View (spheres, rainbow, N blue to C red):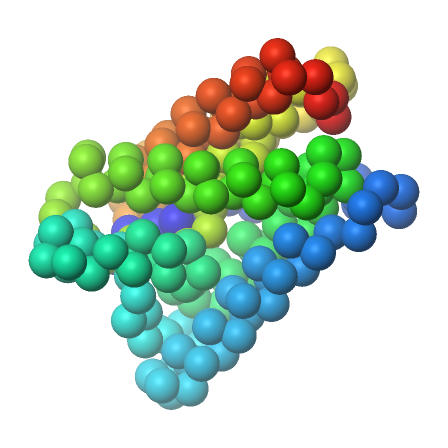
Length: 200
């Protein structure tokens, strides 16, 4: 999730490929397919790989005018080829690991909560004239949800990655608001799941 010129939010984290065990990662595959399809459609509309027509970007003024659907569409939109490539690589690594460990329903529920957390933080703290797109607020929320549940090695890996994200969030044009909102929403989900019993 980034602002205006929308640079990619973070490099691919140094994590192994998801294991072949566990449920098939249908939710992550659906997220990748939806983001890719929407990106290609918007590239077709604009005629540019790096300037897609982000007609569903999150914008506070538009949302307050009644365009609530932007709370959902902005998550699937991306600002350029590198942006979507990096975000989808993290969906493939971190997201599929999450889904195989905790299942489809938990990943789907956490995704909705973290995406809304990211959206609300952008609406509250970002300037109202900015346009925000990207799945990274939701993705950072996945990391936040896994931290309370993870084994010590995975927790250290996630923490190192989150430090990188925090640093990159300070770059102009990157939505620190979306990253922070998604992370806090995910962290809350993780503590609820920890009390409930699942472990990664």
